[in-house]
Length: 274
Image 1: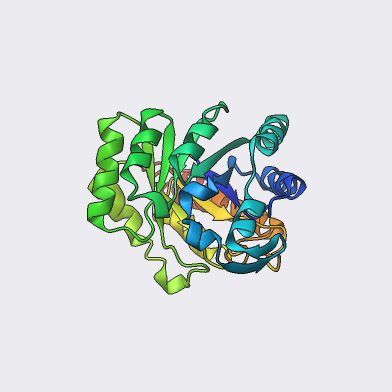
Image 2: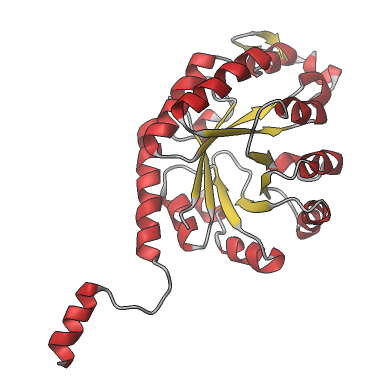
């Protein structure tokens, strides 16, 4: 079965619906199966002390102004929901708090996502698992014991899930990819395992297919020089197209694993063996 390819828009839209639409267009053109956003209730995720601390951004001089500037609300998500339906591409989001997860329920989403940072938030995981939607669970920064607990919650709730091998560095060095963990996760949990990457280029994500990844998620951006903490760990539209082509090529190269003869090999057999 072809890998499920996710264009992670996250907050790379910088609070601008038109930028988000252009990123959706890029994902559609490349042949992605879905795009993903991030949803936060700012006052629930961050402390008042942190939000009141200084930070220069296009929206002001505090962390609060920066965080609020990056967040979409009901109006924006209504527009993006309609746009994704028009473009015939699935969308979903990783919620960073309970209120955000409940907010997302108003949309007819097929998928949920647990961000690596949220894997240890058991109350949030139970809320997500209670919806019984197919859930991608990123495992960056996590120990086996932490993943064990998350998996137990989803199995207890009988919620279908897919783990995603991930290294939470932005951008990730190639030597830290450790793609053999894809097989180790699959063996330990007997479930599909994808790959969520933050590296430069497309090589690691393509090799993840050879390691057995059932999905690939990459952050996408219009321009890596744009404002934002995730932009430099993202890929631009042309590279996204190249990545999808490379993944589909890798899948053809890997084949089915069945011991069969192609027409070309059968012809060679007839010639050489008579």
